[in-house]
Image 1: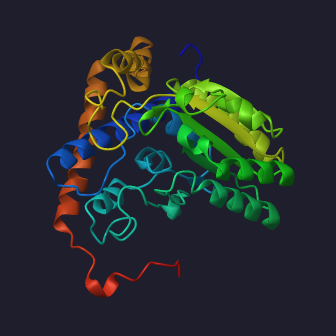
Image 2 (image 1 turned 180 degrees about the vertical axis):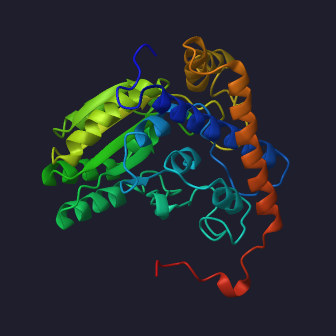
Amino acid sequence: MVNVFVDGGSEKLLECYRLMLKIRLFEEKVSDLFEGDKIKSPTHLYIGQEAVAVGVCAALDKEDFVYGTHRSHGHYIAKGGSFNALMAELYGKKTGCSSGKGGSMHIIASEVGFMGSSGIVAGTIPIAVGSALAFSLCGGKGVSVVFFGDGATDGGALYESLNFAALMKLPVLFVCENNLYSSHLRVNERQALDNIKEKAQSFGVKSVRVDGNDVVEVYEHAKKFVGEVRLGGGPRFIEALTFRYRGHVGPSRDLDKGIRDATEVRAWESKCPIKNLEDFLVGDGVLSKDEVDEIRRSIAKEIDASVRLAESCGFPGEDELYEDVFKK
């Protein structure tokens, strides 16, 4: 955390800190609501991976498109999506971002450029490449960004998409959030070559592996790559090493399933991206501890308000069930 952003300085760091904290506190609230049987939708929590979504989205323009995964609350919030619409969606309410019909894995905020997520592993990768093709054909300067996990690199959709994007020199940034596990299997138990960026390089795509717990490092590489992509340099690929603190789905840490041990989880929690940035900002005099507390209180109030609003809204009616199947 020695370097700070050259474009924006401490204000940019503060913006990233607030966004990461928004994601963390939102996900912790969702975890509590799920355990309390308030939320029925299966939830894949983003706790621990906040620096990846925030670092990448900080390098984008509002007009750029972002596509997510089954674990995309963080991407949605980092791109500017509304707490109210997301919380309502998790409750299945008609005021939700997908009209209460998508749940946790199928969310969207097209007004800020978050173009959707999917419960199908690697499902949004070809769609993001299609958006990049549209940007290219229309002569615009937009960039398409797609987030996916290491599990998506087990299948063919990624490699077909990489090949086409490289062949056509499309404006797309691939971001692999390598949290080391696909559901319940470690990456080295599934893949002969577990250096994912090298696979992208085999298509001639410029690639880098970054510390996904360092929002500055993520941002700096994303900013560089987005700039190159926007100027017609073709696709780029970021592999961000990170870790989800919770299990594959739901609030559990999966410590009782023989998949991950407590030592591994504690080791990653000790490298918390939010705590690291907070310590830096306080130590450098950018924030005081009182200001940290106030930021937390303010975000918590906003989240609590979104819960109250979601609980007060109605569910979609039977006459609305077949609406929103296609974009009008």
